[in-house]
Image (spheres, rainbow over the protein chains, first blue to last red):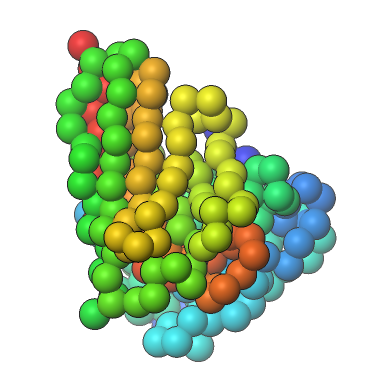
Amino acid sequence: QSVLTQPRSVSGSPGQSVTISCTGTSSDVGGYNFVSWYQQHPGKAPKLMIYDVSKRPSGVPDRFSGSKSGNTASLTISGLQAEDEADYYCCSYAGSYTFVVFGGGTKLTVL
Amino acid sequence: EVQLVESGGGLVQPGRSLRLSCAASGFTFDDYAMHWVRQAPGKGLEWVSSISWSRGSIGYADYVKGRFTISRDNAKNSLYLQMNSLRAEDTALYYCAKDLLQGGTHPTNAVDIWGQGTMVTVSS
């Protein structure tokens, strides 16, 4: 069982927006502004999409945005495109003892 | 080109050991923390271990603590994972990954470069 809780699946039509939630505790998501999000297509390595809650690495479209409120972080994808269909994982720093925790992943389906 | 290439995976019996290696190229290896992340077949990502560039900060997930040891050789641009007392539940694709932050004193949870992974299967 993953430390961070994500919905198992979400879906949306092309052009729409979807939001994926990631719920943790005050020991991880709520305690630090260090939440990251990864996109993984089948058979591929994960790709960093968001770090430090809301920052985008170079090359990631601004359709991807991140936010946090309390113990819950969110990834919003606007203007959905077919290539956005993938698994998405949230990840949080959890202190100098545990370091890193992942969510269980959310499968995004573009209808 | 920035690249991470893992090796050392394979089929191993429960209780035995295996050593994974990760060869890094295309960036200044000793400027970055490094990570091992695994993914069991059909399952999600699972953090295994991280090491800072200076080896001064090292961490392990509870489920591998005491059995796995992470290390690095900055002169050889290489990361390692010594896995002892392997269990069936350690079966997974093991990814080597580079931290986003240059020169940080501690590993972060932002990983910008991943290898393609090396498969470890623990079975009798």
